[in-house]
Image (cartoon, rainbow, N blue to C red):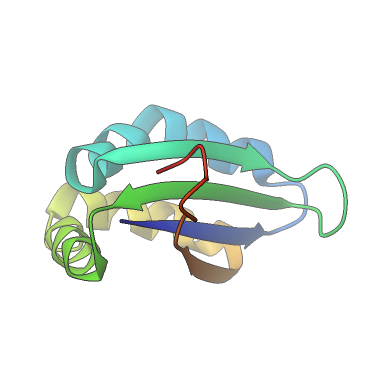
Length: 104
């Protein structure tokens, strides 16, 4: 099992716009393909104008398959075309829970 932590840095002043669009249009599509959303956050200290989301996958192969299916969906592509201009950079990390982690 792996967790993917994705951080999007957004155009200053556009976090609210991004979150509104994601909740209205993107969340249902992404959940349909990616499945197990563990959390969606905004930053209040450190680097600002960021959203951070965490998804759980069974394996790297599971993630790759699910993301390929997501990016083959015309509805997702149309949504992404609308929000990508709000994102200035993207970063992701893969996290593996320890034996004693509550998120297993």
